[in-house]
Image 1 (cartoon, rainbow, N blue to C red):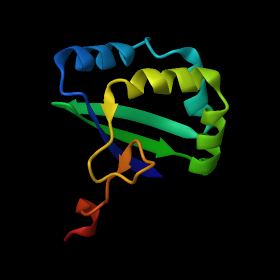
Image 2: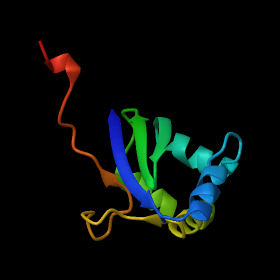
Image 3: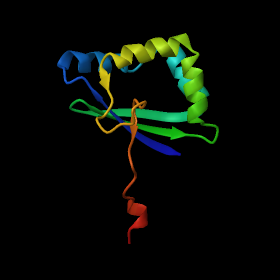
Image 4: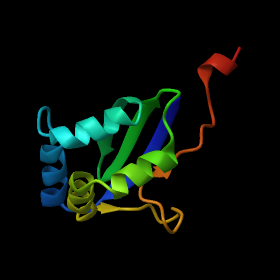
Length: 114
């Protein structure tokens, strides 16, 4: 299943540079990659335009967002990573009160067009 999620970074060149460096090829802490893969997240890509981030995530049948959240809450490495990211990330203004990344609503598919 495909998920499209959005969040903003601080509108600050240094914060954006830090975020990109933390996500550069080979920079992700191994425990974070393992946590993502263990949740049956098969692919994850993040794109940036200005200070807006878009995450594309492909999940398998074993993906359970509630179970992933519970596992993350119990994992000190994930909590440290989330605190580091939270220093430069800002939820969208219309996000649910407890949401970090905001799901995008799918409104168009070329496959559904003549």
